[in-house]
Each structure stands twice: as structure tokens, then as C-alpha cells.
Amino acid sequence: MFERTSQDFLLRQIQRFALGVLQALGVKVEDGEEDELDDEEAEALLGFPVDVVADMHLDGLLAFLARDGRPDPPRLLLTGMMLAKRAVAAEEQGQDAAALRVRALSVTVRAIEADPSLLTPRVSEVLATLARPSAPAPMQ
Image 1: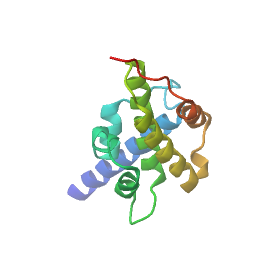
Image 2: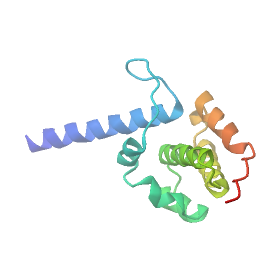
Image 3: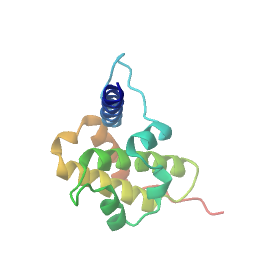
């Protein structure tokens, strides 16, 4: 009984992770609606709060996201997409998010380098947004 329950739980977790990656890629899932992945869902899938990595240096961030010393493309992509979302939100509030943009761009590109199949139209759109020069933050 216990073994069956733990297998079911593991399969549900794998399915949630796969759906989260698909949503981050912009793939329509289930009912055909393309929903944005919220922070809480991403954190559940990644296993850590996005705030933990938002201020990390790139080398430390890449090491943190690696599995067995090798890049983990789905985790890299999901983290990059969440960092991109935060960078855009910060800029919309008039904050300087240049460092966050660079981190999001770098992590997302590393994911694509490790697994080119992750480059979808949605990911390309996010990369283009990140690559554009950001507007300078207003003077306070």
C-alpha cells in the first residue's frame, strides 16, 4: 500500500514538473489555455523560492542549478523564465533590473545550449525581450 502511494505521489510530482516546464515554454496544455506559471507553482516545481537565486552571482547560480555537476536544462529554463518575469515586473515599477535581466538571459541561454529543443517561440520572445536595452530607472 505504502509503495503504491509513494509511486503515485512521485508520478504526480513528475507530471507537475513537466507541466510547469511546458507552461514556461508557452506550450498550451490540457484545456488549451496558455496560463502563465506563477511564482508559487514555479517554487514548488523547482524546490526553492525564486528569491533565493534572484541575487546570486551567475557562477554560483549555475552551480546551484546543476545536477551531478552537469546542467539541468529544465531547471535552468524555468529559473531563467521566472527571473525574466521578475526583471520585467521590476522595470515596470521603475526599478533598475539590469543585473537581473543579464542573469535571466544567461541562465535561459545556458538551458538552450544544453538542450536546443527548449528553444520555442515563447522562449525566443522572452530572450528578445531580455536582449533589448532596458529603459533607465527614473531618478528618485
